[in-house]
Image (cartoon, rainbow, N blue to C red; front, side, top):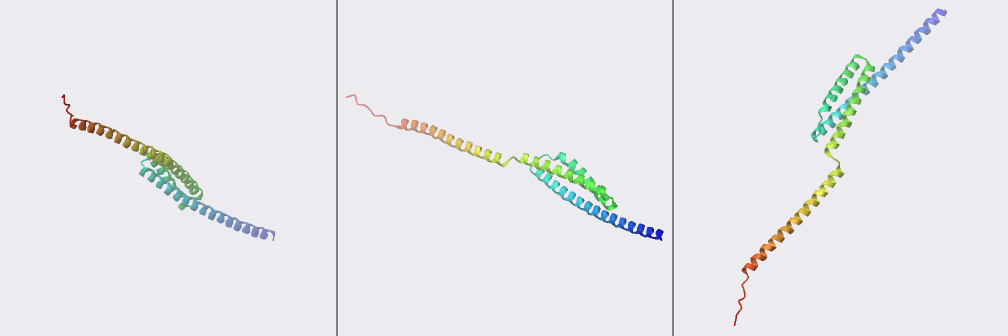
Length: 167
């Protein structure tokens, strides 16, 4: 009788262990799926920021290698997920996310550096406009002065001389 009780308890413990391991497998599967989904979003965002930086004229040659490596890691994460190696899938997805975030931050900084700050652009526009106004005013005054001198010379040349009578 004691052997039967021991076998029943052993079967119950085995069933509970299987249920717990299945729950853990489901949890790690959902964790892996979430990590892969997050990595895909980060990569899409990184590609967009790099594209914007390239459009802004920033040199992006260093980012292509990092994005290529991150894409390979993401492919490995997908492969590991399909095989059922969820721990590796999470690891590869997290590495992909880290690289993607790093690329995104660096490309954003490079784009902003290349673009320049709006405050600097405002000051540059104000100083340029002031210089243009001063140049136009000084050129106008100089032109008016030259025209005035030439006009007075012409008037003096055409002015009739008053004849004086010696009588």
